Length: 380
Ligand SMILES: Cc1cc2nc3c(=O)[nH]c(=O)nc-3n(C[C@H](O)[C@H](O)[C@H](O)COP(=O)(O)OP(=O)(O)OC[C@H]3O[C@@H](n4cnc5c(N)ncnc54)[C@H](O)[C@@H]3O)c2cc1C
Image (cartoon, rainbow, N blue to C red; front, side, top):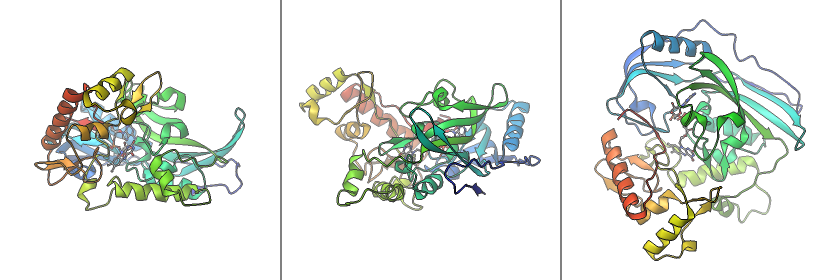
């Protein structure tokens, strides 16, 4: 599905033709169960459902929704989704936009550096793209290895892990603007990226359907390991790890935590971390320290900018009595990662929602913090 055009000379411009657009051929299906399209394996049917592989098909699908006055929802790999048992009453468009990866290069003047850019169609598997870049010896996204889902969803919540965030590598996002029905190119600065945020999941939620993302990476940068688990992994190595070494290390660490999708493993029937790490005023840290009788410096926290601090949601869950392997009925917490709520055994939306509500209530009662759900919720 994905052709690759690449120049062996470092910065020779080479453009791939993404399309001649074929005549659109969308196939609209009815009452399609959504559970198999999500990593939680939960969710009722979509009233209408289609997959689109080109921008022309996407436009046709949007027209179908408009003609029939249907709400529409864009689905990627379904790895950050909690879908209601009642399903979705509108059109679900699975954005498997395919095409070539377009590689280009240029010199930045300030600061002076030589960059390589990859323009990637939205439907490409994220991990496959990370592998391709890391194997080419280029650093910038290797710590984001093993995150499930499609490239097109990576800007939505500005995916991040092990010391990297995708925002720092995104140059532009191409999207269909549902207000004007035109394709637009949004430079990274206009995407409002922050921790697990962008305009796509806040101010402009549901306005844009992303069809391609362009990444810009410094060709001569060397990997930096900021995350303790990774530093430990390479502690005995005398030579600096290459991006591909880090790619494999991250996947190994993820697997140990059940944060890699492995078919058949109950621990990864999840939507990844279910709660965002809360960003709070330092005074709250003092309050928690007083409540627990634990010195503030012993409570894990990091600076989050603007005088605020970030607390690990997993730590709060554990202190509130929600440990790894916790089970309530058919839903539970992964036995390898406190932040991952799992579909332990044929759980429903209601099971996960009840567990979520219980955790939120307990953490709020004890620490005065309302944990924010990370996965996108479709329906109630
Ligand atoms: C085991 C596991 C580990 C995870 N680890 C991490 C992690 O370390 N860091 C992290 O940040 N996330 C993590 N996640 C969450 C998830 O993988 C990411 O958020 C991923 O980017 C979601 O991609 P997706 O294609 O599956 O999107 P989906 O779940 O299908 O959709 C998520 C949201 O993006 C929107 N969307 C999807 N595609 C498009 C598009 N083309 N245009 C417009 N909107 C779109 C959807 O409408 C929805 O609102 C993890 C999930 C799992 C299951």
